[in-house]
Image 1 (cartoon, rainbow, N blue to C red):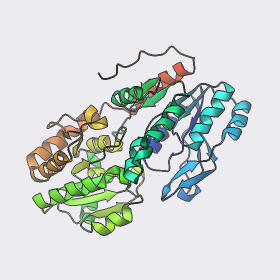
Image 2 (cartoon, rainbow, N blue to C red):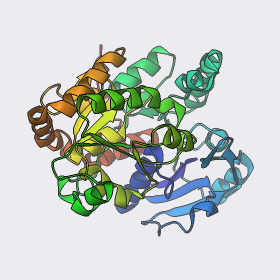
Image 3 (spheres, helix red, strand yellow):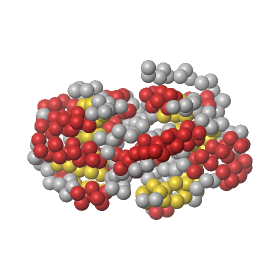
Image 4 (cartoon, rainbow, N blue to C red):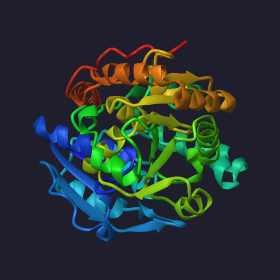
Length: 387
């Protein structure tokens, strides 16, 4: 098919949505589809890597206030209607619900082009982290309106599909997340990197990878780190990533090592060179970092939802604690900091839990759903939603 993919975040940006759709564009192109990616222009990030078989069309955008690493696209229905009238795609897939994505849905519907969408970010729950909790219902209403104008909305887990369906979202389907088990592998452990951190070969290191923003629950993460350090003074903590909170966190936590931003090609060495991953966020729709940490052979602890619910078997390959219990996450961190034998057991079993979660399987399923939405294949049977 000719597929137009519209997204407000895409490589070389580094975040879960950008990574996911960078892989999807590449793999759909490898499977013979003509993929054109429409995304905001990002000259500030340097020259992007050569596109792997797909075309990229940069469009005007603007930085998110207070968050220079993210950029939104301006509405572009006029340009998109002209381009899609001249060279009509057989399907439009909208990955993000911002001004660009919403305008793409309007343009596709006006031209009678089948359009699908993805739900990746719980923006309605973010409102509480930015002092605007009353706006949460309004944001949810906007998201519902945007997605219900498409033929099918994809979310990362059956659990989230069920939650959104209960909130009035229609046509839900699962688009899971794969993990690159070559890029994220215990063999990428780098003794030189641990020497740079000033740690001995047997000294436990906890790492955190991700966007340093309020919705990631850094308060609880550092509360857990403090308890881990009190239980085991030899613990060291490494954080890789950027974001609006970085400067403050770095001032407040001089005991931690802040490594900054790394490409996805580099970050595998950082995961594999650590020993523990604490996932404190409760706003993720999936949580790619958890599966990447497990593929890298780390002992993980996180709340029992999203990726953790799907892959963690408590006490066997990781620790999953009740969603509403911050105290249990702190206790899990203390246990990983002090119980060397448990830590070794979880690390040994972690990778096996995600090795079958290949991008090949994820893309094959997604491709079948897109073909069905475009009317060129019969729809596959829907996966049962959790009761």
